[in-house]
Length: 115
Length: 115
Image (cartoon, rainbow over all chains, first blue to last red; front, side):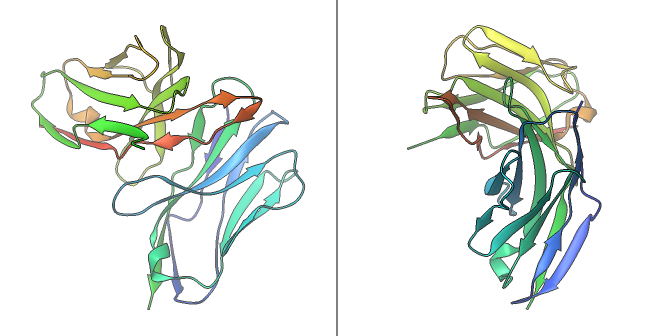
């Protein structure tokens, strides 16, 4: 079974600075997807960024980018120019490329933005 | 465009009571899921469905039942509620269409407290 581990329960960053959230995963599969989700206090699950394992190029979405290291099974999220609205719980998630598209989530990292 | 709709948003149950959490999606997605999120934790899969009439257990199915009589609806039934079922419940849907995976769309969540 696949597992996802986020070793940082809490992180904080100054507004406008850069922060990196860590995620490692364990799988024997070669084809899969990785995701970062944001969960603000409203509880809504918001997709931040997605990475296909077969792509060597790291995904980027505006101020959000990932460092995908397939051999090391590492998938970190970098948030540049942090904004107050970035404050939330962030979840790393894994999904196999085969089967029923079930998501496996990490424990989450609570990100605080200091003004 | 409603997406995934969950009802109710909040509920308090007494130990031993039963209830059904409703979930409906209007995107014609074939896959649907129920997750639970315990305080400070990531989401764990309870049950999922790959199409009408087909359901299967996830990681934490004990104490729950589901049915999928239509593509749109995927209710989650709690029988004999226990304090351990106090959690936030999320319904989600996704699809495999034209050789492409869609992203998972989540409902707003149901906060359930069992006392």
